[in-house]
Image (cartoon, rainbow, N blue to C red; front, side):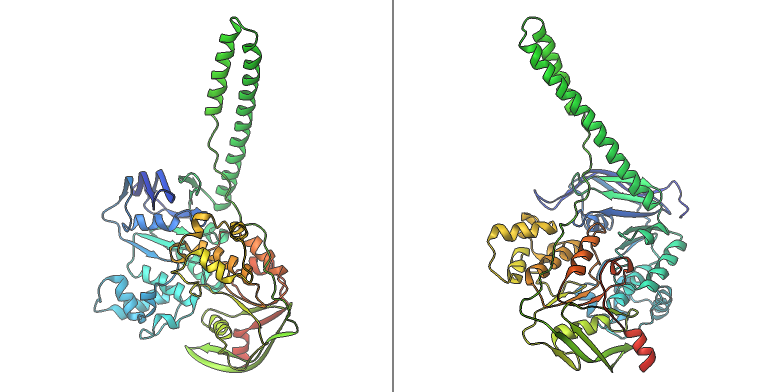
Length: 492
């Protein structure tokens, strides 16, 4: 754990913020962070965790209250995903943008931070040519090159393979400065964090806990249990006072005054009921229906594309995916997993044979196959195989915590976690014959993951899955394995 001082570097003082009348984020929030602390920021998808990062960075201002940030503090953020503007830059230009200038020793500085994140990246390559895991490392390196006093990390383990997560964990354990990280990865967090700031999506308050991640979660659960028991006792006593007051009120005389006092007592008891934080809701159990009228071999590949040293090679290797078979595609970051999946979806994979008429459902890790300019409602309607009554559409969308307000929202304005849930709802409405999933746990609240795993385990069509989260994969029936790293070692 980190060594902290008493110096407060960030303080939220009665901070209130919203994006409009129905989009409250913070309500009179108070919390502080001291120099050297390594803390986790948690909360349900869409609660506003990334918004807090933007407020610390000075990109957003409070509606009421204040945010105090030490003026001498250097702050850098590693966001969840590369922006479209970042993706068209070369690696060298990307780092120059992070620094705000182009120092004489830029290439040397880049080399140092790339070594820190264990990435070999030619400086003249365009960012979009890197895999999702490699881009995640570039984002982290882009923050580190500024040597910040406060490092903000937004879901830093997304897209990273196990080796990448281990390198990141080791780095953060030894990092001598302050860190605030958004993540749901318990094992990752336990390795280096001092405690948790919990942003409650219902009360819009931030609760602060110190200690091990698991200890904090247990502490929250115990507090909720205690407060629920206290509330039950208060409500029972209030009800008893009301019932006795009714008896006395009908007796007349001085007992009416007693009845009045008992009613007042009942009201006091009801007002004493603690506003207990509701547990984060999970999505409802769901199934992804399989396309009707398909069977046998759905997809066959006569070769697979392998990327080594940023060069692509098509290697003869037969992959057959039949209805009801689940295939796990494995390999280290940068080997070409996402590239292969995308080429299957686009129909450009070398030696590819897709059964006629098969609908392909694609969960893309950066959600770029969703139309960010359309409303969630329009995206889901387009995915529907049959024209659903509006009530049924909204009812099923609600299984994924997609409220009426979210239905009207443009996809591009959603949090990454909300985009993930929209993507799963879209797959459910689509009823694909071939399901292709590229890191489907990225950005997803950990409470939803077992439900998603169950849905994929039950899926009766053909499926190809890429995931570095072993705990997730273990919950899904896997029939075949294709390891691009192993194929590369044996055939290249």
